[in-house]
Image (tube, rainbow, N blue to C red; front, side, top):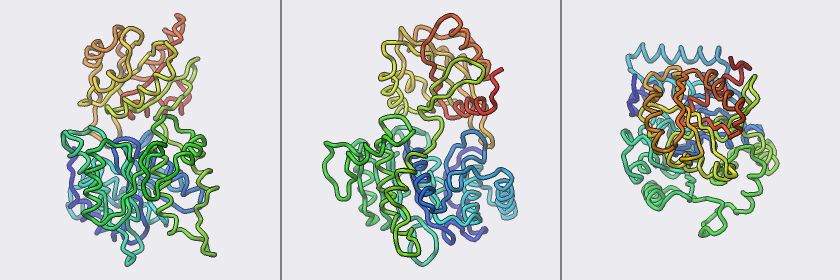
Length: 438
């Protein structure tokens, strides 16, 4: 069924499964328009290197439906995933709850974390916050084993206006809906003023200690703010690219500081140390974001970036301007129907130097409400931003790369950038994993 935000169904289903999110493990809950996935990845990697058994839930999945759930940074096996998923669906049908696909997936993740005896789960909001299925999470209150011990909010921008509102104030209010009474929250200070004020107001209402971090030297001092130079030094360890990772890492490190007292060894020492933090940052993996990959059987690589909204496009544009050296770019673009191509190309394209090749992506499993932006419409709209719009129509990414190879054969050495949708990035990564291109 389509997206239907609300919590009543997921509350009911979790109750039938003994409320694992309350009774079994602690949780970190992360919201935001951009950067929340990278933040979750940093947290999960640091916890894993610190030998704190953790579960991770992100969305959407990248390669396969089950890769949205990880235990200690490893994708949960499909066979085990399917068993728990079947159990959850049986309960949903038995009690006629009518849960959406994402609600079923969320409950499956929460149940898996219980069955796998994780100490803590790191959970990314699916859409929005206040009414997102993941917000069935409840604050830790020391009377139960589980509950949220920290929340984090990354960069907020305009996205999903039809569901969250068409102003930053409205969208921020929805994202701030994950804030739990008296549970500490970390906010990316580089958000615009209205976002910061909205989150601060919500935090004040719930008696929440709010920490703003950004790692920027000229920022106004704040209590417990992470020292800028320290974060910049640690960022050099990260394999994740993009200037915005400074903010994501800053948020992650503050959250780590807040949750560390919960994880002590038998001698009473914190298991999360400077060494495990450094090791975790260095081992962080988060595919589809400024990721370079070599295309099998073809003598070229591409830069993948799932930029699918204006905020992400702005960051991609900043990165590309540093890489261009006066050269044009071949863009391979596939987008979700309903997204704004203008919000992407206006920030990344140079009209006289770049080429756009439109394509589509494989419909994501169990997400029937997602479909590709029509290629012919994409080509028509792209002509407003670049003079050279390739009229090739390729719905299969391997055929698109075979077409790009013709540019290479004619001596065109421009960088190839694949962007517009994480689902398109998933198609590329599956192709790379298979080792086949034609």
